[in-house]
Image (spheres, rainbow, N blue to C red):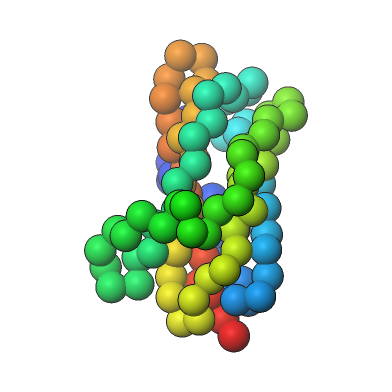
Length: 104
């Protein structure tokens, strides 16, 4: 298994007018992921405010070991978001995340 739950690319920067469907490869955790669930939190203040319904559109998809997340959009400038993806590999429920900083 991976030593860090954060995606290896680290923090991503995204414009407030952009809509991006981030993706990652499950290989560091294992192959053939199933049961993907995604949530988005605004973590600007240090608290975790669930903004999944406001800032994610669509559903996650899996092709081989590639997990594509729902599109992240409608971000507020200077806010920081944490997008978490929970999935199952070899009977283990795992979770990874990407931190996104919103820019003008």
